[in-house]
Image (cartoon, rainbow, N blue to C red; front, side):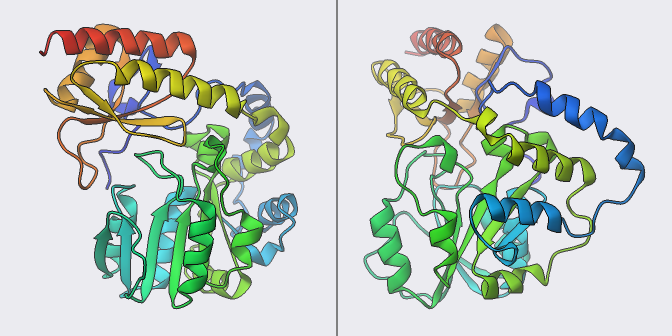
Length: 338
């Protein structure tokens, strides 16, 4: 999908508060900006064809070997590389979720089927794609259940997108645990973890033999020099990019309760910082235009996620003051659409 993703700020220009993007909007990037400014002369040279130095740095941070890590041009490149690696396979996708899994699979002639939940037993061999924590629902598949499920289905490759792992208090399969499973490919997003979506940088963790198959399809120079430099800086300064998750999830729950009390609105349970909401009357695109034009607020029209209706929209929790602005604006919209 080349358009229709969450953060379409590029179409709207400057907004007052951006709830449409799933990145955390309150990190201080001053140090990163200064570091990248000092590296600007490097844009006149080719970067390393393969970001092996950054892969080594990522691997050290998780006590992995460099052969178990592959840095990519965002998690999205990793999605398409995995689909290409297993071209023509059968892929099952847990929906509703990020559209790129299905898009990448269809591009590489997979037979694609969808599930609403994981069944007790799984019969189709091939790949199973799941975003955990999930976008747009914010839900987490319980770690013990998922770990046991992976082990009971050794003939299935589990592609687990862990891009939203930094935004939940729920236990998750770790990179170390993932590489110990011969049928797990785990995707990670520095875009989400460090709030740098413009840099397009992510990485994959998997056992060496499995990741070797994916590496065979990567193209040279896919990760540009600025992204590689930023990756080095961010991993060396990880302590500056931590979120007080307890407070953040408390704020998520506060907003959830306020929205759930509104007539004409349903809010789904979430284990992360994102909330999937459903208008009982009216359409999400109407709400989106209303909030933008009147308050400079941008939300995610989620009606294009498979299985969701025209009233579905998604928000990512921001600061309490910003969240209150959204809550009041939503209440005003709903009162005029009764």
